Length: 408
Image 1 (tube, rainbow, N blue to C red):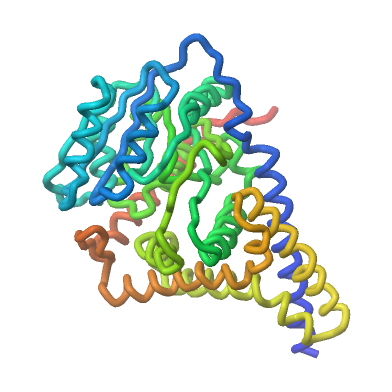
Image 2: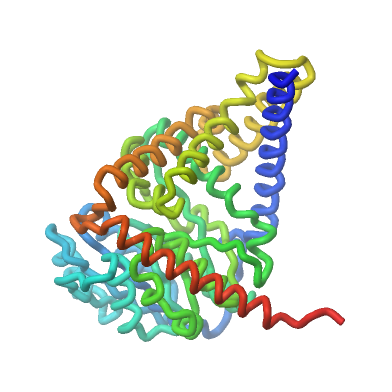
């Protein structure tokens, strides 16, 4: 009897989670506008500074800068932060600066101050030099279509936003990458309840390293990257900083306008999360174990449950495994412009995410910290800073809630 109840519980839990995934996916389509649908015919849009941190990005930086210089925006400033690169990154950036007619300049950073992560420090330095009314934080491997930034600014103006995240297209070269990234994107999206995120003042936040756009005055008022100096997951943290400081935030779908080759192989996807995955759990082994276990059970149990347990429980697993999973997988793959078949292999794709969590956790615990771009930060230092940061964020949330007008 007890075993039967466990099987019933797993079947119903899996069904409930995949139904939530379905509702949330529909909410994303409804609430996150497509960037291509935004009219950008205003006579005058605010000025923009694009901040591009680059450390050893010689392979991708030229395409990024070429696409930025082709943007259809009159008042555009581009700042490349050459952060202690040991390859040709600085020389490439200077070459494109010479071709830019003064629109692009390079800041060379030769040292990292104590108590900072390299990317956070670079963006902090760049923001201090920026002249734009709007700041766009991006990466050195992102490619922009000519109208991308103009339409993003138009959306910020239209909806009076302080922070805009644009979800990019992910460039892939192999089918295995598509399988892994379709599953990763679906799970990441499901972790951000779109309906709550779109609600001003809610606790749900989002940030994407490829495209975090903020109003300068809001960024400064929130404390900027000074408040994120040792936050490993800096892109999501910027979203949290803006949302929990009471600013208006939204995400848009940038498929076709913003593209990035996130990692160069299937193993590269696992390695690419080496720094962030364990950090996202607050460096907690129980939380990381729970996350990997939940991800595995959710993706694989519906298939196992087809063959074990009471007949009705197996029918529920059949609805999940043969109905909801393929529907969401194929829909996500088509949205991402991946082969639809990649969406039918969600359980296999989830193995890459689980492997990334496991790899990040084991390596961080073995080293006693993270080593990223030749710089080491101990777990003790990162956890102590993160505890202070979380206390400050909770206080910001408390102040926002207490400032809301109470109903009569």
